[in-house]
Length: 151
Image 1 (cartoon, rainbow, N blue to C red):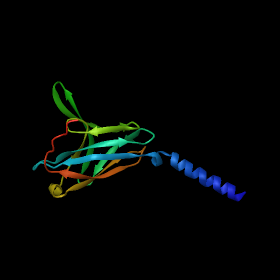
Image 2 (image 1 turned 180 degrees about the vertical axis):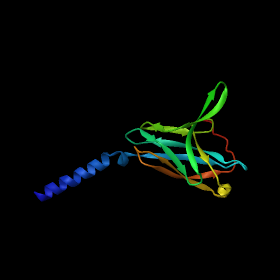
Image 3 (image 1 turned 45 degrees about the horizontal axis):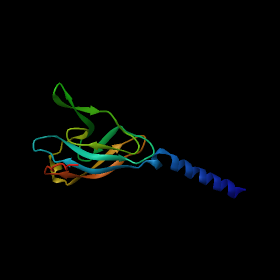
Image 4 (image 1 turned 135 degrees about the vertical axis):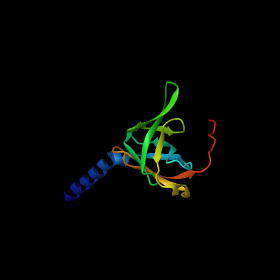
């Protein structure tokens, strides 16, 4: 009797773990890079593709980077013919979707105080989600512009 109770309890705990949001979270960062900081500037941008292969939508409420004092989600919008950046307080990515952070669109804005950042070749970026857990990647810093590929 004890064996059946123990087995049922362990199976129940394992099932609830695998059905929880964090166990099912499969969110990935791909093709990420940070634009090198222009001398005399204190901000730069990071671009990436965020893929959600989990069973639910994921809401990201903040972002951090080890090279930045502050990092934010930003969008690029045109108002009266003028391009402007706007901070976004959160982003949501639906299940089985990919969200592209690219120049002229959604991107990560990194506020840098340390001029020595350009000596680094990588930065660790973490997107924080209360729904799906944190997503972290070591992202290269690009010193030269790369022409976008035509798809």
